[in-house]
Length: 319
Image: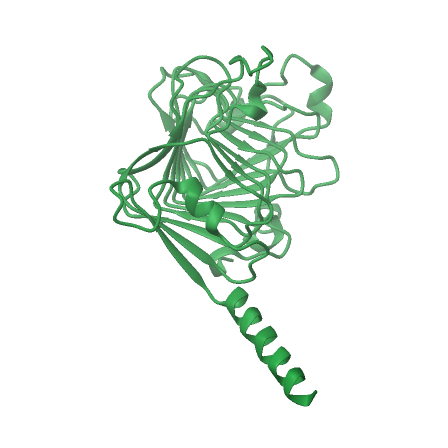
């Protein structure tokens, strides 16, 4: 009986070790990796994995609608080259499903991220449907999502920071679009990113829950684009308690002098928190903003640390 017990313990230990070991997978379109598609690699990730699974993605355009289920935690996408490693799809909100109904904005994403602790590095995420209304490149629902040197390409509603309790960190990323192209309920810190407006519209449309202290924070970012001068508002509130702050950013002349828009609802002016601090550039006309926009004091700005914004989570060890 003792030997059976020892054998059982050994088998259990081996199983536990198998599930706790870091895993790496390679995706290559030419068949030289473990899988030719990204979704196949995602499907191969162990459920409830406690260690990081790195999925190396070689150069290529991968046209797939991707889903990272909540059970596939601790996944790290690592691209070979940000400009040549492209994950793309072409759905849009008014496209019909099999029942003849619109798939809607939430259903239009090229990539759905439900799992916690997701990281992407050197990847381009794209919705290639063009200027056809709402068309999401990435919808992020899971908590503690990190994007490093990634690109997000689209038009209206490019990046959906979806999860109400999701914390998201974007470092040295490029995000482009037209109307409300960064939108949603998550708490998100955009650190040293380029935010690129095309055509005209609104850089952000936060729907921050009332109880959250922080919504969107843009820190050391470049707010620019190809649109004519005075074409973009910094933000408008998708929900009444939207929170968006720009700190130490460079604002190009695309930014409309008023800065902020109330989405046609004057009552939003009393509930939103829209603020700026120490911005520069031709679009940083703080004294000409709408009266309900805020200008942070130095003491208030000092509270906008990574740790405070992201509720104690320190991605990449940043402070």
